[in-house]
Amino acid sequence: MRPGSPQPDSAIFVPPRRRAADPGPVAEPVPWTELSCADVVVPALRDVMWRYVRGVAHLLHPGVRAPDEPVGLSALNDGRAPGVKVAMLATENAGVCLILRIQPPGGPVTASRRWRDDLGREGVRSGAVVVSGIEQVAPEVVAPLLPEPPSPHARPWVVLGTDVRDRTGRLSVDPGDGLLRPAMELTVLRLYGTRPAGERPARCPGCERPRVRRYTAFDLCPDCGWARQPGVTPAAPVAPSPDA
Image 1 (cartoon, rainbow, N blue to C red):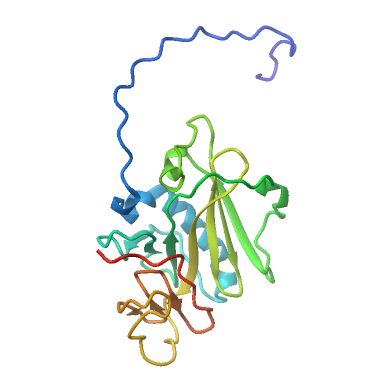
Image 2: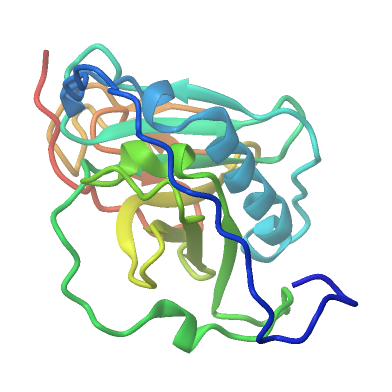
């Protein structure tokens, strides 16, 4: 009701419903293994995650900043029909990147406690053990991360959280019922600095595959998302990805 309108018990005009048009045949959903990382992590979701990284990068890696600039997505295991998709988010001048391990949409959530009941005070505080961020998005932004299409009448929430000690966390989605669906695991890594000690592993300690890559400041397995960086606990893989 707009300011200055009649009393609350005034009549409200509701237009008659129109007969819905026949939507035609419903397209079959594309199998998870055939989707690319770009299909799942759409540009609007990348922007949400990068805003989060910009807000917490200085706590996860003191002295490192993430500028406000366009973020790019690099798919690391597209083309191998992975069960778990692995990708990297980064910008041209940032000192950090975000490693994504994206799980296939899960089944129905059975938890009854709503996540907003435990929401802390707003603000990023030095000395925090866990940092988190939330943002509302359009339903189509998170549809690939959910087992069922979200309601077009609700505004889903994207909820991110990261443990400051190991720089690893999770992105979950609340499609509108107050319950979170875990969607992907995240690790924030420095792009520059000391290399991991020793040689690049011949095989990944997480999934035993021989494709570990050595970057300037970390080692990363593109098959399962295992990562190693000085001062960061190696991230355990979500699940092994089958080879194509």
